[in-house]
Length: 368
Image (cartoon, rainbow, N blue to C red; front, side):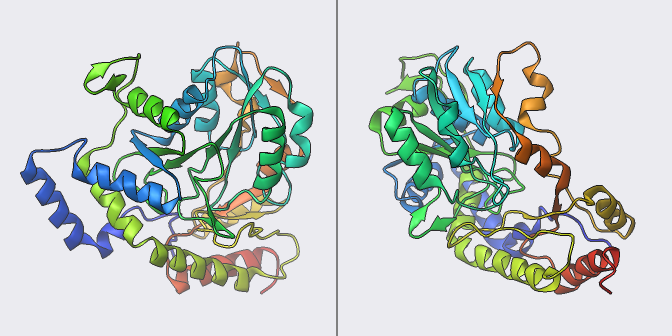
């Protein structure tokens, strides 16, 4: 059997008629950017996350960069971030000319460890980037908020993988001073290309981000130096359709995860994901094992595609060559990079594909 890691076309195949209909409507309208659907999407995102404002951008990387600029980050400022994340988190900091300061993650949830945060704060610290991984909300967000408020430091929330996630009534995108989402095709809400969004309750931050995303324009007048970072009306419409069906999508992802938990529980040698919030979206199903590479090879030999998120820490990336950065003890992140393995997960994966994947793992650990 062949089990792909992800099926990019699952939503289109299930909603083809609705998607093609709205695409034809937009193409016939002659309004392809900054139109009705983009406005509706931004309002819907703000409503979903209990925020006042949302701005769509060309990517989450842009959203993070604009968020940092709106927070006043300048060249030479220190920005704290975890070393265990996708490179876009780091890239947005470097684009500001800021100094990345890497603080270790927790072994339990793979996200920034609040207990290790304050020791990294200096008078030069001007922002904290909180990354929410694998469809979870950061379980220590209240602790991080207390530390940030104590030192007067804004929080930039990298919620690229956490659209639709809730923790006791608080939505991701609401946890940081500015929250950022990704609509990359790998996400459970995705553009058929790329896209992102930044959300805030500050009118000043809203206008700064909005202008940065659109050539610095306000009322058609360029007031600041900006960029060209937008999504098309078709992308906005497709994302809107997915948000309307988001509850059902998360329910399906949750059922897939439950099946994995049920079939893999009790296997000595692997650690299953830690659910960190009341409503995760299970963007990834990540197990941990000291025999990661051997297990991955066996799964590959049996037709099961897996991924490693993330084999190279941000603190080890080549893009840091010649640049100033600081790092603290990163032992937990180093261990995670050696041991994590992401299993296939998407709403349309079949029970047969899940069972086949789990049986391959059980055979590896001699549980069958």
